[in-house]
Length: 186
Image (cartoon, helix red, strand yellow):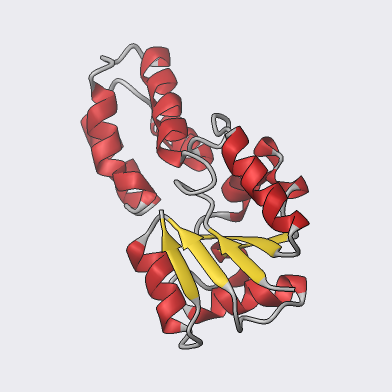
């Protein structure tokens, strides 16, 4: 059975749109200008800025107007409550599985947040497995996380494909394996 490893954030789900929705709601709840969403999104950098650094920046900017616990709550969930799976992405996974591919989500991030996204969107019913960096102790592009993905479904990395939204994490991760894996940068 060939292995298809797919990134979660900004590949299977629009992580940035979900986070933007969460930030917009946060700003409304705390009576902050809607224009601040642009600043928060810039600091967040598509989820690549460390959560601690985003928290420090937000706490500095909104000091006295927003409790630090509210910032932590926002960043703890991220946009997990706002993610959606498009019909196109769901259909593509269903077709790949029907064609005999073992589909595994490979994602960096916190186990609770990434797991919430997988279950909220129903991806847990469309893939044969998933690995989350915090849980396996390895982050893309480290080859170990891709080995963990293959092990999760008893598949070989030989002939596998990686689809992802990050040239650094996903595509470089495929190259780092040194097995001639094919990759698609979304």
